[in-house]
Length: 489
Image (cartoon, rainbow, N blue to C red):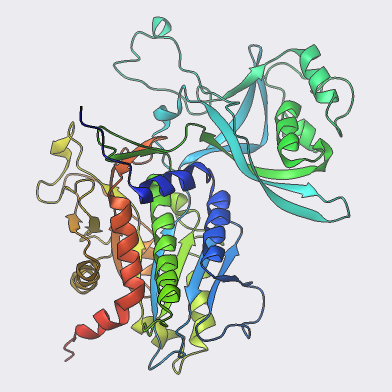
């Protein structure tokens, strides 16, 4: 009997990263650890830049959910100055706990949630769910701290209705997102809940919930955290954080599937995972820049790359990128302004000489829906990086930027594929269109299935392709860019 092929090492590392990163906050924290291991130094966006020196490796965060990592040339910025940037986004469609989430109905404790992004919401039914995010807690010595939390056991579920009560479910599964998509947390048992809640430090004695006026008691005017959320949910958070319930001031929590990311398939050719879109890019781009600087350190040879090298990972792409930490913010311009002071040119000149890879995931051809794809532009998993093009600028690739990307892929030994949608099909988009107003941009990704599902499918062999492409990009782009001569009239 032939044994299956061993799971690719890079794919296993990616799965471990995704499992540990149920929210953008956790992803940023884990990527920061990887950068620190590679010798990058944390700096603050709020502080002056005098500490930045030639050859330095730095990173900073914004809102705990966006990340900038960059290196400066060892000999200083030569010539006009330019940046080689790779960008992506850290967020994925999910359910977010509402600011006032406490609900009870028909004897169940329920948690009010708002839908974030354009998810395939039917895939969230009957999954083992939990919560993760950040919590603002009071400190023992005074002041407050924003701490990350991840409950590693299933405590929530969105149950489907039995087929016996809806015989049409297999023909047309429809549901109301407000009234029929509420997760259940537990059963109402006043004595049990009161006892459990009262046993937690900081919880008022007596009933665990305020006196309610029926199942739909209006809590819009609730002021305390115990009035806004079920005390038992707060108790779980307090236990995980090692604090009292009354130390919890506020939080941002996302629901996530507790099933770990995994390598699978007959020959371990697949990755079955949440959030491939777009944690795959985040993982691979950071690995790429870390691998580049670690290879330089291992050989004792300083980088010959003349460009400033940078990875920028944004939040809120799934809802339009309009936030202080999204691609429509000043995060990229402020970074370029920060480093343009080290060049002999100004801000706009640096942008004119720079290049940006907008990296997101792409659509692999689906065997059951092959007619939905343009026959000549239907990428396959484990066959390399996908260049995404759209004449209507939903993607920003053009002849020059795709040529440069192909030259980098050739130097990296990475295969390249192309994707465009059919003319009778709608097209997604990325952060690329926002950022291409500033800098030359190409849109790329990896082929995957079930995008925006709670469980997506990607190719395990493509992780290595992606990392190698980014590593080579950060090693040789200025040389590749110099090869292309542009006629001007």
